[in-house]
Length: 301
Image 1 (tube, rainbow, N blue to C red):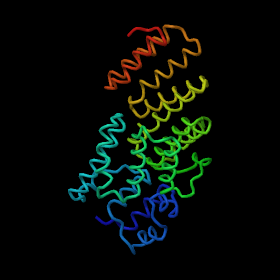
Image 2 (cartoon, one colour):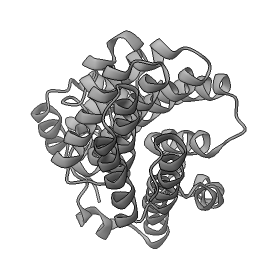
Image 3 (tube, helix red, strand yellow):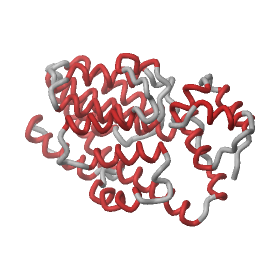
C-alpha cells in the first residue's frame, strides 16, 4: 500500500502540527516528508501507521489487509507485548522480546523506542542512572530538542509519554523526587495535547495518577496524594476503565488513614479496593490489599 501525499498533508494540518515537528516525531527528515506530501516520494504502510500514532488517530484495522504474513505476525507480537505489560506479565514479555527485536519492524523508529521502553521496564537489574540515560536517548529519536521544562506544551506520542513516565520513576528511585513529581504533573497537564488513541489514554493516565499519588504519599504530601487519587478515579471513570481503580482507592485509604479518617470510612475504601481488584482479575493486587488491610488498618477481609 502506498499513501497519497495530499492525504498525509491534510491529516497533519488537521491537528495543527508543522511539517518540521511531524518529521521530527517520525524520525525522518523534513525534506523526506516534504517529498511525500508533494508526491515526489511515496509513504509505505509502516510509515503511515506511525504517522497515525504521531497525529493521534485511531489505527483502524483496514491497513492490516496490506501486510504480508511475516509483517502481520510481527504486528500481533507487538500487540501482545503491550497487553503483557498492562497485565504485568513481565516474564512472558521478556521471552518474546528477543525475537521481536529481530523482526521486520525492528528498524522502524517507533518500534525502536518501544523496544527500549519494554527492555528497561522488565529489567530489574539495570541501574536507575543507566535506565534514565537509555530512555533519554530513545526519547531523542523523535524529540531532538527535548526540554524537560516544556513537557506540558509538547504534542507527545504514546511512546514518548511512556518513556517519560519511566524516566520519572527512575528519578524518584535515585532521590530526585521533586523532579520526578514535576515531570509526572507536566505529563498530566499535557493530556489534551497527546497524540494517542483513547484506548491508549485510558490505561496511560490512570497509571500516571497511581505513580503520582504513591510518590506524594511516600513524601508525606498527603493532601496532594489524595487529590491525585480522586482525579485518577475520575479519569478512570471517564474512560470506563477499572484497571487502576483498586490501587487508586487503596492509595486514597492510606491517605485518609494518615489524615485520621474514621474506621468505617477506611473499611469501606479497603473493601471496595479489594473486591474491585478481585472482580477485574487482579488477584495479586487483591492479595496485597488483603494483607495490608490487616497489617496497617486492622481490617480482616
